[in-house]
Length: 303
Image (tube, rainbow, N blue to C red):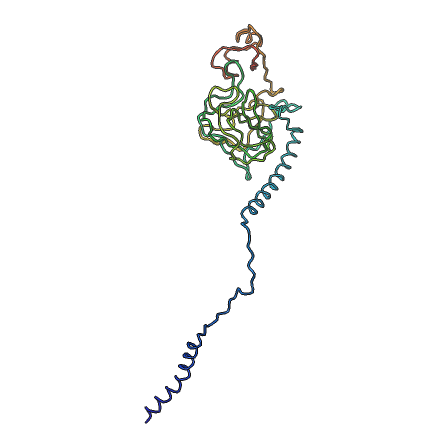
């Protein structure tokens, strides 16, 4: 009896459900799920990559403008009142070094780095060469090799020159200028702000050049410095973080005690040595001369 009652109760419970299911199927009813995005109006958005790039470059220009303004102020403190593209060797109106003074300049600090312009073999050092003074350090390369900025700076000159070929001159905050000559192509323009390691040109053989190479110069207010005093060209690194400018390191300082002679037609090293009461060997050492051959019109150091 209990079993029959239990079966009847189960049937009564199932019948409404079964009836509902059948009614749903018979009426072809589909369960509707609410769409959470139903009230949102979708808008077609154009590709924003160009906008992002424009914002990035605008930000970069703002940074460069700030750095350029700072460099302008520094440049004026060194009497760089103009970036005249016709003046490659800017000369400071006053003596760079006074008597026996030493000026220390910072090459590296916590905010700066050094990049070797091109990691090639040194082919010709600073000094007297082929009857004339060679103010740079030559590094061998192939045409098209990338030349990089040694330090952070601003482009003072980027142009073609009869002697230097395609040349870039960078002015740096410490007063130094670096020269990169004989390039096949220039990658920067005057007043560009560059960072150490930035590409500034491609190596070449333009101007008065005898084969593809980089002619690299360092000058302080126009006075040339032997780059090997500062740079180890075999290890591609700086030799020091601070460098002393004095009569021993700054070529051509008017008050350094050094004396120079412009060679006239018919003169020899012997006649010049007698005139200045020195020796041929001493003149050759001062000018890094490998022979006694000289050329009229060239300037050599005699003391």
